[in-house]
Picture 1 (cartoon, rainbow, N blue to C red):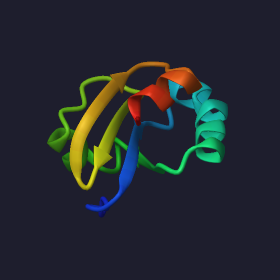
Picture 2: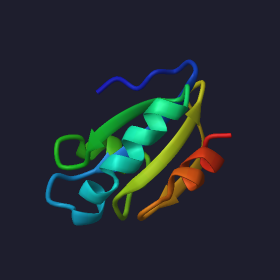
Picture 3: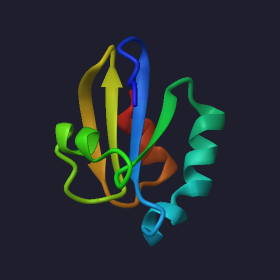
Picture 4: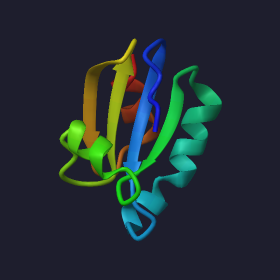
Length: 88
């Protein structure tokens, strides 16, 4: 999986079997509608190396990148406002 090295990106580390990850779907849809930050969903089962690279220990986990550099992280269920605050 190629992660953009330019611009603002929010990585959503999730798994299909994760209940809280599924519950985040409406919030993530709203985030995409209201934000210019690119959202990239990363299935931890299919992208284990990438999850290791970012030190993912629990999901859902959100990692905010600016020009390829991690600037913030949040683990667990997040509100729309929390996601917005993470990506400011």
